[in-house]
Image (cartoon, rainbow, N blue to C red; front, side):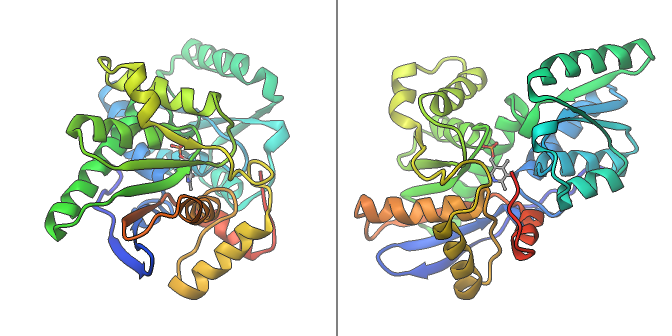
Length: 310
Ligand SMILES: *Cc1c(COP(=O)(O)O)cnc(C)c1O
């Protein structure tokens, strides 16, 4: 069966100081969409190639990745285990779906996550399974490849419409999405700014992870070049991962009123707000700006319910 894939739509949102476009990764046709669905489709190919028969991953209670992997596992007939940190195990819609999809959720203190994963994988092997481990958030070369492909879609759109995006903005978490976009850019040597708005991580660590991911995918790229290329902004994280912030909430409400597009407090609302602030601060005008809507629809419903989760 596999995960259905399609090119996600791009359209013009508004024209004022700049022309603002949006690419709707939230509309990817699997498990409420989002960047984790694009990554999962490639992981599934690898799982099949390796003849694995048990999927193991890591994710918090509010993880979009956890939901999508659990959904993929049940749709494809694989058993699934999700290691989850006790400290962030709220009973969100994402968590409820992981449970309904039949994933076995193993909670442990965040400091014991690494050892728990090793131990569970070893146990599964002893029981005769061939487990496949996916890093949290779909991090790693396969996740990066998914966003190299997305970059190709963006270039194709530009060619068809005869336009050039001067900026691409998106929410950056584990940095995999950003790494993929930057690899795509390096492969084509085209000129634009790809701006990752950090949703939690601070620099220098946040930027370093993006840099390491790019180097893992493209071995012959210099650190100096990357130092200049990677824009990972950590000043719009609000009060941290998933914490409410009035400006972010105002952004989400505005997006509903003006464009009819749902965003959440953890990722896309934060990134959209950060993008607007950045454009104002840098006095960017007369540019083509693309916002990559990375998904998180179930978290939007948490927001509607009046809740904000880590
Ligand atoms: C995971 C996630 C991100 C961050 O993607 P990374 O590749 O981890 O940087 C952004 N937006 C949403 C909605 C996500 O679920």
